[in-house]
Image 1 (cartoon, rainbow, N blue to C red):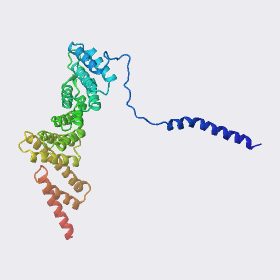
Image 2 (image 1 turned 60 degrees about the vertical axis):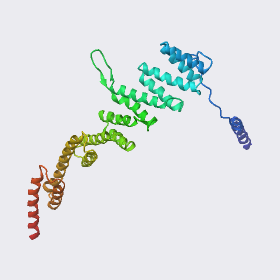
Image 3 (image 1 turned 90 degrees about the horizontal axis):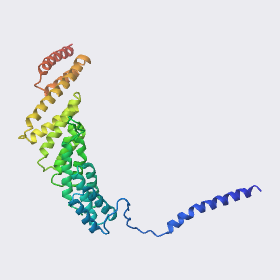
Length: 330
């Protein structure tokens, strides 16, 4: 009597599981056929013509007559209805150009990227790289939020994606080194200094034969110097900047930036000397460890023989050596 309800429950659960599994098994047994996805149809975005070549001619004619907005819609309709044709690539390119000519640079950029990603080899690749570059320059120099007599403000960081697209889609293009240099300059200008160092370094690493390497080398050294000034008590940062500036001066002795680099080096040299002197004085005056002070003072004179603290260090070193000598004799 007590087993029957359990059996009925088990049979019910088993039947329920079979009910849910049957559709899965049926679907799994069907053969798989890979099919090209059908283009998406939009009632509000329909082509005027019945085939892509005629549609492209129609859209081009609208553009020639100055009907820019209608031309845009018909180019978009062509791409939507016949996305896998050569005409679609031409329409996508024309649509992006129209947006650019109307000053819609952000939307144009998106459409050019769509062209790059979906229609490789079906359009003039170098022309699109040129568009990326020129739009980037326009945005880099453009003022935003103008109002009445107020000139607005610059936002050069908005140009970074345009120059990055040049480097990503055309790393060997003739103006790719210039695009990468612009990225570094902008990042330095907006105080993203660590990123600027890597961006300058990328010019040197990826385009070692470019005439822009000299400018990139100085930019990296200058940015490292700016970083070191933000942390004036950081010895490693100052030494890294000093090394970069020294390398620039050695590699480009005739550069117009050499004197500026040397001035930076003199400033860093003095800062490193100051830090070394403070360390020695700590052992001498605060920790009162004369032997450690003597060692640190000696190292100071080896590295910084001619600074505003050098004579003071020499005199103090003589005094400490005399005291240590008297202690040994005693």
